[in-house]
Length: 425
Image (tube, rainbow, N blue to C red; front, side, top):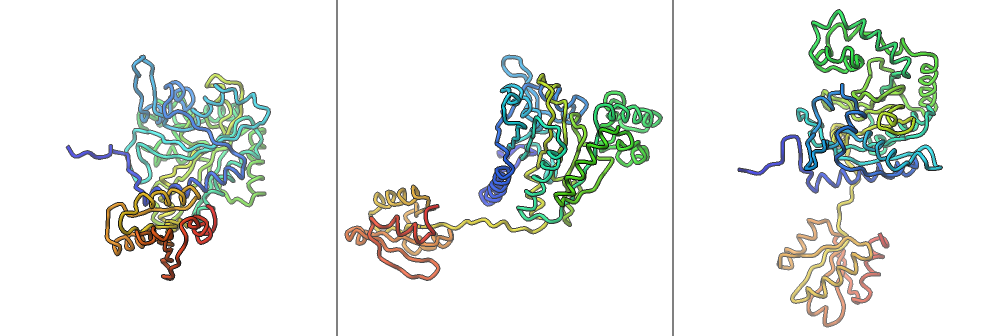
């Protein structure tokens, strides 16, 4: 049997991972400027965390989770999304008791969903996310959205669109729920089995159905915006006011409901409008989830966050033909002549300890082939060490750009190369 990666998974090779590392570093720096701190949660949780947190009427819980019993008979699930696990950790470690509030977190997570693999949507996917817990201030909603928009602009994306909606508070959602049940009941014979099962459990999920998305009943379904009470309207107005103040363009889409049960008030998505990106344009989705902490056994805690698909971000960069400013060059490559390997590895370690990127030949190649290797690795300088140089206690340093070569005492090599390569890195 020829061994291959499982369906729905991919290998990221070095020429790809450098792009991922660049993006991840940008995201970390942006989180630092927004004063968000990193959290890391387990790759699997007790299944109940997602059943109670994500919602048992969602496609994720009903169809897509990788769930198994461990040897102790406990039901365990590989995480299909990031928020529920973060909120669980927030409650378990009593972060709500910190005098510094709200708690502002970010994370990088590998997620697992059993769905039909397609471009930018795999069974093992990578996500960057942020969560803010402990504040019901609508300016936090705007800040979270601003963080996401800042990230996309920082990596160079231009063809993106922000879409927002309000799902309202509990009172507003209940009023909209009754209107949806009344609206869809006469059409249930024409809708799929999933829609039928959701009618009384969570009719809002019907609006997110991919099977019946073109049915006429979907197009004229009651809008949640028509059922917002005064408090919910005021909240949504403030969110829009803050976005306007931040000069962040947006569209209001009354049909945007998101695919998870825990959302209320603000919901948003950021989409790519790049030509050739594909049919599924969503890059990021998120929203407010006041009440989720209580569902997971914690105190009443307002929250908001988003999940950013990193595969889809890479596809958007490709669609816009953006070349990331990635430095792949080598500072120093050692060319060795004769039996000087012990001294070479010692010098290499000294240079690496001082922050320089250094490599050498490991295949006992001829001098000409070693210089070719240095060229392929885009080395800025070559350090030549042979038996003759060793006897004189010197090395020869050659610039690969100009061809100029100087002789340097071995005990001065580190300081010389730090100076030539722009100082300690």
